[in-house]
Image (cartoon, rainbow, N blue to C red; front, side, top):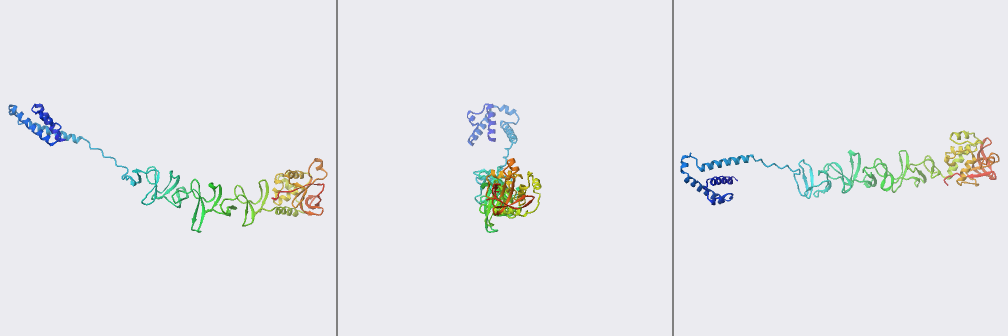
Length: 458
């Protein structure tokens, strides 16, 4: 560029003096070395012509020559060019790339030293990938960095995973997440398990079911509801293994199906103990003593929970009645204290209640809902339920209707007692009459108002 600037100055001077041949005009802008040589020749001719036509002026002038002027102009031009060159700024340096290495596929590193994974020349983001060289699986987060020592969710597989301190996905093992205070399990593909899991345990050389919360994936112990199968189960607090059969938990007995582990409710037969028991329909806990089930009274042994048979229930009642012979309990006062309505015509019905109550069979007498010592009201209650006839049996309640207030008031009965056994020409009845409690023989005749049969579960 400097050579082109010098030729332009010489041409300008020659044209101004009118001494440049026309052929020299073609030199302007020439780029080849031949053009430069032609330009130099033209300058020589121009200088000679100037010298011949201006000899006198030249003699009078100082020692300057057109060549000197040209050299001065050239020097000035070079100085100017140098100044211009010095004034031009250097091109700005490019910002360093964030990705120092940018392979088409594989590992790369950012300027901050973070590892990234490339797929088709682009940084992988929000996705899992497997390094084919090692077979290890990783997760690239939204910013492209690799997940390390943290839990992450992968939308593509709709599953949770955990990356260890090297970024490797944890697989086929239990893992405790300290920050979340929970133990989870990751399967062979690294996915967090949710729901039931059947696994082998070398401790007892057997397989066991465990349950992981369907939302959080946390390993469950104790009572747990298995949503997928609509069942309650119990998992051992130490091993988290599902339990089966009878289990004593927190002071109560429960039963879990020997195949499914599902908690049993209500009536259940336990073959190992040959007994029927009842488990609360809400809690699943074994029930003891008196219990109304579906509108019927039942009794379950207070120690074993075994359901008592009808004969055992009748025996409890009759034994209590026999134990009261020739005693004088204040049946009326006790009945009123329990909230009952007292009949003013005698204690006979209050005594029947007293026997049921002390035999721990309250709900077997009119479901323990009537609480009236009027004999006719109790007879009518059993009639309404179709449990009255004239066939007296052991443990039944027998009603009588004698002349007097019952007829005057239209009552269906005026006296009552408990059948404690058969007798010649009638039945043996325990009752409170004539100021005493003792067994008496009563015939089944016109004075018999009816025989009520309590529900004994038969």
